[in-house]
Image 1 (spheres, rainbow, N blue to C red):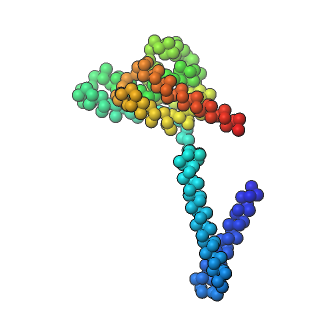
Image 2 (tube, rainbow, N blue to C red):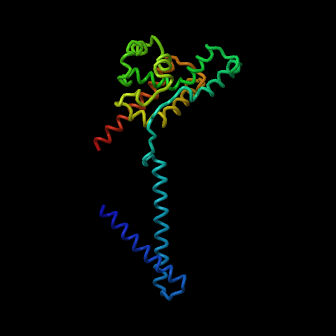
Image 3 (spheres, rainbow, N blue to C red):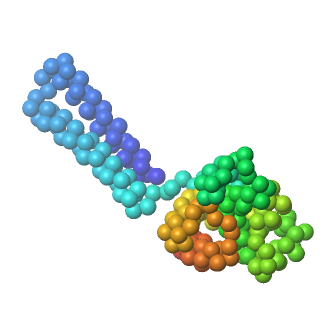
Length: 234
């Protein structure tokens, strides 16, 4: 705190001297050669200081040392992705919206909810759902045993929406830092580059889930909590 006050005092003093010298130069006061040199030195110092600050900020951005803004997770909805999933499905099956059957629409909903379903299944498997859903324990157990996918659970019990209050407080910090900041991008890349599948054009499979869980979500989760432990030690 004292060091900051000292820096502020020095800056104020230097600015006052700078303005006085600038005033003298503008109105052609005879400042003398020494003062003119001093004026130039102050200008150079301010330029170097400004450039140094810019370089430091760029380094922070490059190295990830600067704090990134975390947007708290509030919700994600299957309907956000319906239009694009529908467009992809119609191209894949040479249909248009007017010729879609109920079965087609169910498939489109599952495609539009695919990434939400992957993450929801991970939450269920790790007991990270809120206790509000204890009444649906039978369905939860069936999902854990891989007897059913979580699609019907998502659509029937959660209305196709994953809400913040659906998630246990134990893991909400991880979800805040990961879901909208890294998950969807890494999930999309993995779907295309590794699984060779279409984002918003693929239905849920346990094989896909297991791969994404192990190689993406579990890794991110472990890294997050390892970092928390390191920060607590420091």
